[in-house]
Length: 462
Image (cartoon, rainbow, N blue to C red; front, side, top):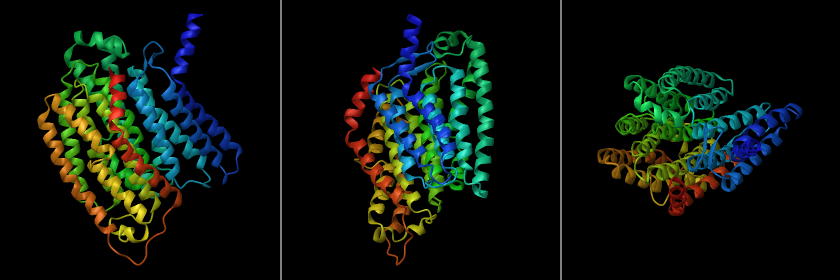
């Protein structure tokens, strides 16, 4: 009787993940019976599943499930909320209605979102590997979804690098599990301090390599600009947002287990990642590549919170930053999706005159990515910078501040053409425009409500 009660409680805590999985399966079956050009009910089903998952995330309890292999805590709950909200925004901005393979797109998106959530909650190395694959394979397919030359090339590059670092991660899992005499994090926390230090270091760094790839940080960042440029803008929005959320939280959970000098290693990765992303973005004329390098630099700022994990504000700041970054980045991509013919910075000339509200959305989102008050990214950066300073990483705060100021340059290079006059301008997609109008005020609202959100995250972390 107790076993049955415990199983029911575990399943209850996992209801958002179960809803996503069931929606993916049900959507695939439903799409098989719908006309090829009228598969919109699958999108409705996916949206309903996300809303139901959000409701249960707010109402559900916390704890570990299935013998401690999966953690349902504040970090997992925040990841669920951000990922599910991101899926709703992506569904809104995607020009896939009436496509013969609309069902496939939606199902792959749901599976990738499920993988990101499981990545964040994984409390066992074997589950972490399974989540890595679930968060990767659907994205490979989405990248080449259009079956054109650039998308196929981008998908191949994405897959090859993912396979390489995924194999490296598997080697690390094997090594850490072997010397730690177990794969679940509670066991490893007690056994790894007495294990051979060299084996633990090699294995842990190998595991970190796979997670760094999913986050898009140095040295696993090479796929980000090519994939974002080669695929459709909506898929670019997906790959630069959803997997990063789960990967960053997974790194936070993993570094608390292996007894290494993580603060120094991750601080160096953070500094290199934000600097490389910003320097590369300076010379980009293609708006998708610019956003791709922008997202690499943003991961560098997120890694600061992991380097300062011992500070009380580290985890709350990380979760706030993730929420703010996700909605702001998706808002910028929604503008790009609304104007698919505008590929370069100069193509945005005349935006202010012909599409003034889209120009406002673009300005707010780009300045938000810089960290301009009162946007959510500003609140997230300020909290993360404070945590890093409290952790004794003052030099990293200086590097991050310099990078933040430098990033203003390439964002303004995009906004400057938008202020020029132009006689003709491409038509804007209605659905993506509406998504931009929704995401932009939400990105500001996250900043305005940063105090209450931090209080919730602090209470959960405590």
